[in-house]
Amino acid sequence: MSSVSSLTTPRLAAGFDSSVFEAFVSLRNEPGWISDLRRRAFDVYQQKLTEPLNPEEWKRVDLRPFQPKKFALRGETSAPAQFETLLENRAEFAGVVSHVDGHCAVSKLDAKLAAKGVLFGSLTDLVRDHRDVLEPHLMTRAVQPEADRFAAWHSAFWTGGAVLYVPRGVVVDEPLYSLIGLSTAGAADLSHTLVILEEGAQATLLEETSSANSDTPGMHVGAVELLVGPGANLRYVQLQNWNQHVWHLAHQTGIVARDASLQWTVGGIGARLAHIHQQVTLDGRGASAEVNGVTFATHRQLLSYYTQQTHKAPNTRSDLLYKDVLRDEARVVWRGMIRVDAEAQKTDGYQRNDSLLLSPDCRVDAIPGLEIEADDVRCTHGATAGRVDAEQIFYCMCRGLSRYEAMHMIVEGFFHGVYDRIAVEAVRETLSRAVERKLGIGR
Image (tube, rainbow, N blue to C red; front, side, top):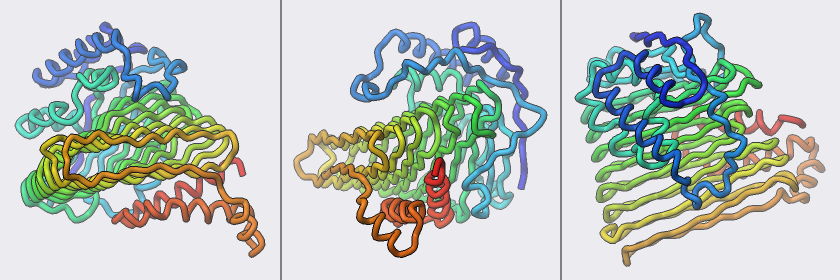
């Protein structure tokens, strides 16, 4: 195993105006092509600030309490923060990368994989020596600054993040692990995740976000790019486990080439407000994607997902299943769309969102949709919402279970449809434990 260190950056002023941007760029000591990308993105960001957000995506998400000027990019700390992670200790990893407050704290990769040409480390470090690998893909194909103000903001101010590159035909058997952490009150994190699998490659990346303590506010404006080459196979998991004082806003896009497959699992547990723009594009004949989501919202959390399954080639398949549990005064928003281009004949697209409401004051907005231009397709969608059946709880309690145990059994059974689709045992166990822990809050 080998490790690399990241550069040290002093704390910058709060906010993200032009003066902060210039100071930020001057301190990064990055290759010229990266600085040029940042400057172009910042110009787009300033323009996007004058334009309204897409009302279809954002009209159910109240951003009025969100004040970016309260958050600042932080320098590295001398004392490493301790994080209570859910995934980190549940499997053997071929590599580990962790970022705290936007700075790389750990970067390790099995030497045998490095010898095969695999790259896994901090984006800040790898852009210096691997321009030929990264430049064609970094925010050019999947997440682009022109998407909206948040994508442009991230593209101008990204602070590091994990890169996984697997060369043609290389199979990474053991999973890799990435941690994104916030440890300082008022810290802003703009970490970027970039995964590039060349033709015939295979890999599994497990990623987790976490707060060092339960009460410090923070902000994450992130991006995820998953680029799966022809015949490649990627499993990607992101478990969002911030505390309930963090704002979490992100663009996440997967592009799947001919005969390739992507299994993408999302766990939404933490954050005060989270909004994810998640898009999967089936870009080549025979491409397939399976998207799994588990969301548990409590107190006054708002967890929002805007998902798109875009079919651009014939004989492609997408299958999305989200399951949400809500309690207290929490709210979940899911707006899903399957888009089928005219040339994408023989498409098989499916999306479904099921919600279980545990209190009378929680609310879910689940809105599936289809936009189909081809005439030989099979596309279906659906959404359900309902409360826990009081008779089920009564039945369990009559057989010696406490009310909490009965509720846990019902919730666990509700989520099991998603768990059964996840191939990585450590992820299934982790999601189950996370749900059990959150169900116990306030009991």
